[in-house]
Image (cartoon, rainbow, N blue to C red; front, side, top):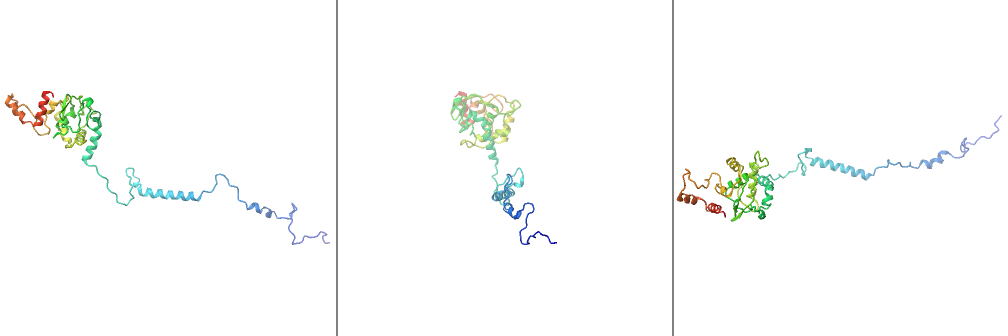
Amino acid sequence: MPDAKKSTPPSAPLLNPDLGEQHDVGDLHAALQREQPEPKEGFEPMNLWLVVLTGGLLFWGGYYLANYSGRFEADEYSEIPRGQAVASAAVETPEQKTLRMGAQLYNNCAACHLADGTGNAALNIPPLAGSDWVLADGPNRIIRIVLNGMSGPVKVNGQVWQGNAMNPWRKTADNPSGLADEEIAAVLSYIRSAWGNKASFVTVDEVKAVSEATKDRSEPWTEVDLLAVPLKSGTAAPSLAGATNAPLDLASLKGHLQQLPPEELKKLLEAIQGK
């Protein structure tokens, strides 16, 4: 017997047997499926320009290191790209090295003689700039002054300076902070070349020779003592005694005095007179 119920036509929409709805669930949720997911903090997309800038900086840093790294050696640095000619740096000459060292060592002297070498009139300390002692034809006397110091009055450029006693700078076991021969040569060379002074450099050999000749001397020099010392090594020292140490008569004394250079004779006579 045929079913009494009417069959559903094929063209009719499918029914959801659970909800009894006439609409497809997929069609109802299509709009929701088109929505993008909500962004989460910490997962934001990186800015493209920041990526480009970072890449550019990394490229420039690599290029700079490749050309200016000096092969990554700690003692080499070059601002000239590798492969290009580099101008050679100026080489310090021995004279420049001596003057540089002497200028540094002169800081020990500047406290008394001042940085410009003009001396200190308030303390009766004579000048070094333009001094006839500094500009003498040879350094024998000023080397002795530095080695053993100096005391008593001294006449500089015609003016008598009573002066404070100058300390000795010879390096000894009792004076380890003194100056070595090379340092004495450097500072004296600087003094004879600075502030308009124009005199020859003092060599290390000259200092060594004087140091050896005066190694047993402990007392400071006086002007009278120094005036009896020749200006240069190898020249006869001014002496009032004959080679045989024979007693001097008036004629012999006059002859010896006449052998002295006029400048030395003048200084000796002034020193004797206490001027």
